[in-house]
Length: 110
Image (tube, rainbow, N blue to C red; front, side, top):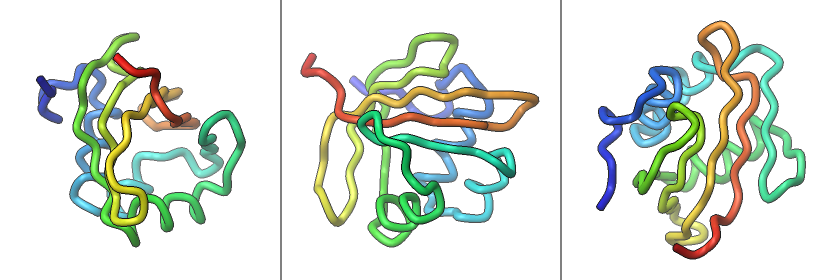
């Protein structure tokens, strides 16, 4: 069972997933603080380089399995044209209505 984007509790995270799934770069970056950072599997990454490669140029898409922490922690099946589908965990830091940091990485098997 998956959650629809509209069911996500945190409005900023909901908009982030919606923008990612719509491949809407402008909306996506509009949700981030100017100095936003991210990490993948525990390693800091260049946010613009990573999102271009892993989301926008490869048709990234999230199907949400679960949310916790008021909607700021997600487990999702993430797919893109490069890697196919994988179970991932996402955690968001939201400050003043914008995402200042997000982490992603492989999620443990259910």
